[in-house]
Length: 120
Image (tube, rainbow, N blue to C red; front, top):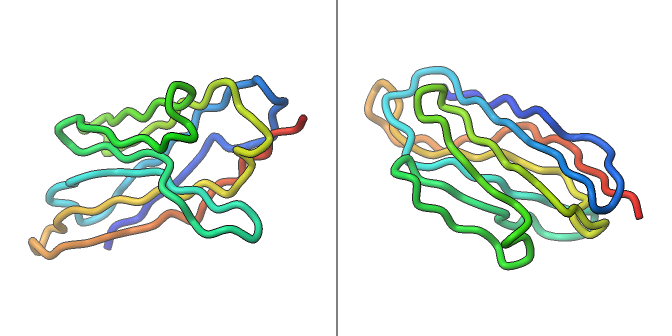
């Protein structure tokens, strides 16, 4: 079983910055990719950014140029640096990862989420 623990959410004024972290632990053989999703009230969960173990990234247009995703493979930890935050970035941010566990079975795990609130 793979567990994800997120941290770094909070309340910030528009234009401010936050850095989210998510650490994966458990029976991990290999991580293929880690990602951040977000879900605002009344909206569907959406991909914010995803990074593969080789460093390839996919970033949503709505945050491109403001958010940066990075991965520390040695620590199985993904970061999301969020700059120039806007009120519309307010949401619960969820960490996600996929890969192979120690039994060489595929896994896809979610964190519990961390709240990010941007005040205007």
